[in-house]
Length: 189
Length: 164
Image (cartoon, one colour):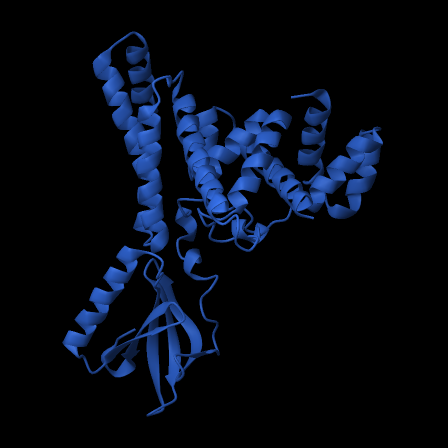
């Protein structure tokens, strides 16, 4: 995914019905998902790296299993990957919550988003709800969060992907952060 | 995006650049809607420069690769594994954290302690640490010892054999 032009080209070819290009495109998607997981593995993230790899594989399987999926652009492709990661984390959190329904009430702690975000923290559910609301307030801000937080892009990469200035990306991120924080804190009290 | 949301967004980004004592006056001069004013000021309260959401959920940031070991790491001056007083951090990296420490018994001496986070929730982590432990045990190296404490795998290195 380091070469934006090749993806754009593959997208164009596959939209014109080039099967070969479509296959190569999936290889790119797989690379992108693996890149995200690999970054975590490289850091010897302990259990987290195992989770990250598991999640990357699961995300890829889900994406390939979706026949309705088609990509309009490189940005769309990357945003779709980020969104798939988010969806998966939310599903996992929901499943865990359902399992524990008869147990003690799980404590949702905003601090889970501070240092080492735990992929299986129940805060993911709250974050998802808040993000969905942010999307209706400012769609681009929500996209920045998907790419930055769920796909692990730098702000420079986010700006490049969305074709906005770095300044705009940084502004979106600052707004999103404050907005989400307020929303989640208020829903807790 | 509605007009009001747009306005809040613009005002928020401008006002956060200002020194805090100028903010309220600036807002009153640039916005007449008290509801919007309140919204912007409220958001500012949550615009805190800390690590909230700074680290991506799956991939830690490049520039901050060591941070993940820090939050739960034992603090200097705490006693580790019953007999090592941690003095100061002398190095850290992708592998974990290295402390200078004082062994208190059976002999009092300076040692270096390397701490790796051993997360016992993961099968493969257990396998990895178990095999490392066995390797260490087999080597029976007089200058390296390995101990588990509080979810951390610790190796102790005597300075005599260890160049820093």
